[in-house]
Length: 269
Image (spheres, helix red, strand yellow):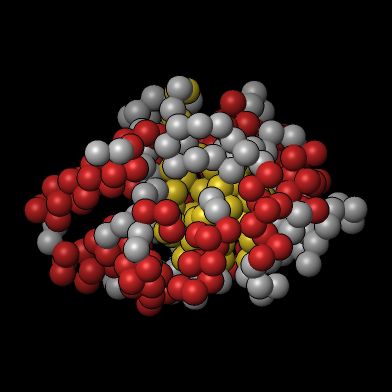
């Protein structure tokens, strides 16, 4: 079993364990009985290049926060909002990022911004589960899903009035995202498993996307220059995680990046 297959198997095992406690029909009913989602697309399409500030407890090779305390999650969300971030992303994947849906709910309850659930979503159960915990935007990894499943999951996300973000790493995956009906596409410069960041992927893929597609650049933003380079290649928004989680003053760094993205010199639609 290769690494992506192992990742999928572990995710599905986790879903099965949770579904044994809360059956699918119950989580589905709960997901339709919560407050409506916030408008993720409107936040992404504000002028300039929007900043999506990401909260994560860890990433492969790095630990940022301990696994139990929720207070820092809420504090970071507020700092990012005060710094002018357009959206908050939260890593809920437990396997590699030590995250949880409770982290995301904590972040969302602390702010007024839309919240982007960052996880490996491959089963309908997870979509309803994410909505129960306040997700406004939900990702789908095109690499891990056959086309029928991709279309089905995208439709389910939109049926709950959330925004589906189709995450791609190659032009072929971007083509599949378009065929599935994606309105928002995120180009991830980091491989699914292992390997280094390749920031050139965005410039390779973005020109092939229809003008109406909202484009997010994911991974590799450490400085204002990185943001400007992505914006020049057509990014409507960038996800910034590692740099903000490592910053001594996250709110200040957020303000700097947001100001860069809103500067008149920053390329925009």
